[in-house]
Image (cartoon, rainbow, N blue to C red; front, side, top):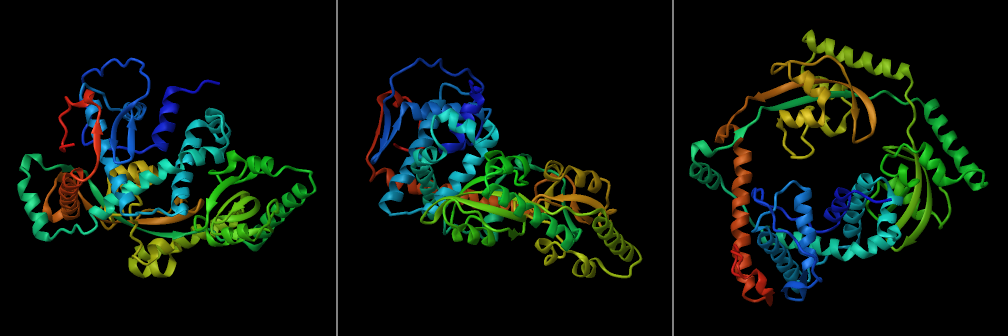
Length: 459
C-alpha cells in the first residue's frame, strides 16, 4: 500500500532534528529541484551535511506550512550548520546523554509516528524493518539531537534577568509594537472521583486472571486479547507492546516487568491507571520489551451518584456561606495535583497559573463554555469531566478566581510574559557570542554553490 506524501514527511520530521524558523519563509515560489546524486554540501568538524539532509529539512518546512523561497536553502543550511557546531562542541566537551533518555525520546517519537501512520505494523512495513531495527537506525540521530539541545542549555544556563532588564526591554519596544494579549483567566477546582468498590476491583482482577489462564493454556493469544480488550490507548493497537527503559514506567509496573523471566506473565498488578497483566518479551540491561493488558474497573451508577451528591453538598455549603472556598478545597477535593494550591489549575503546556482563553477552549472545550459566562468569584454548577492524566471520570465545581481582559501587553499584568522575552533575548545574545567564538576554532567547509548566501554568522 502506498503512503501519502504528508505521512512520509511527518515520519521524517518526527525522527530527524526539528529546526525552528524565526518567521515564515516568504511567499515566492521555490526553485524547481532537479534530481542530483547525493553529495556533501557542508562539514563542521567531523560532522557532514548531505544534500539529501537539506532536502529532508525543506520537506519538513513545507509540511509545517512554510513557503520556500530562493533564500530557503541558505537559511535552512545555516540552521543545520549551527546544530552541527553544537554537536561538534558537545563531543569535544564529552557531553553524554544516558541511553535511557535517548530511548525515552525515541519511544515518544515513534509513538507519535504510529498514531499518524496507523500502527506499528504499518510503520514496520514502511521501513521494511522491525521496530527494534528502526530504533537502532535512528538512535544516533536522536542522541545527537539531544546533545545539541544539551549544549545549547549549557551555553544559556547562567542567563538571568533582573527587573531592570525586564523594564529596559519593555521600554525599548514601541507602544504600537507591543503584542495584544488575549483574555487571561485563573481558575480553581474541587474534584471528587467516584469510589471504586472492592466488588468492582475483584471483578476486574478476576477477568484479568481468566485471560492470563487462557493465554497460558494456549486457548487465547496475548496480543489478540490486548487488541480487543486493553484500555491503554497508547499500546492497544500494537497488541499491548511497549519498549521501555528503567525509570520510564510507574514503579509497580516496572517492578513487575523486571521480576519476570522472558515469556512469563505476571499476576495482576495494580497501578494508578488501573490493573494490568504483563508479559516480558525481551530484556537487555535496563531496556525491556513487554506486552500488557490494562483493565480499568467499572464504576457503578451508585458510586457516581454518591460523588455527585457530595459535590452538590459542597456547592450548597459554599453558596450558604457555611464554608470558604479554601476550606472546601481542604475538606472535599480529591485532586492531589491542585489541592495543595487552593485548587488552582496550572496550564500543563505553559506551566502558568493564568490561561489564555483560547487555550482553555482548545484543551477543555466543555469548561470553556461554562467559564465563558461566569464573572470573577462565581462558582460553577457541578460538571462531569474526564481527567485525561488518570483516564477516569470525576465531578467538579470550578471557581473563576481572576480574569484579565484582552489588552496590549503591559508590565503590571504581563510581567512574566515580558520577562520570558527578556530571557530569550539574552539567550540569543549569548548564543550569538558563542557561535562567533567557536566558528574560529572549528573546521568548517561549505560547498561553493552556497557562497552567494547571506549568513547571520561568518561561517
